[in-house]
Image (cartoon, rainbow, N blue to C red; front, side, top):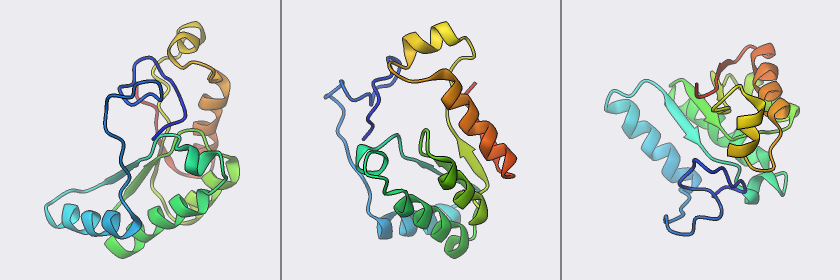
Length: 142
């Protein structure tokens, strides 16, 4: 589920073809344990900018999920929640979350505006830099 309409993304909000689903908290934890047991060395929580979280300021849910995976499963965690407020990034860092991914796709602002409709280039770039300031590793999809 994502509130954005990025032209390159199969799961953009205007494309109604792909099935949409969310796993519940317990299922994500269970799957994380199974993935670690199978030899996986990093859990990437790819969330998109879910309106149920982003538009309602329910970021504590994803902070709790990432933190539980980090502590209970004892595996590095990368969160990919899109653009979030600075306090959320700070909380991820305080909880020991290793990576913050916020894909930029391009560092050409003109192309960015064509690909990421109604999104701000600088906002997306700066949120990653803030994560780096808090000591997190960053990923931007280039």
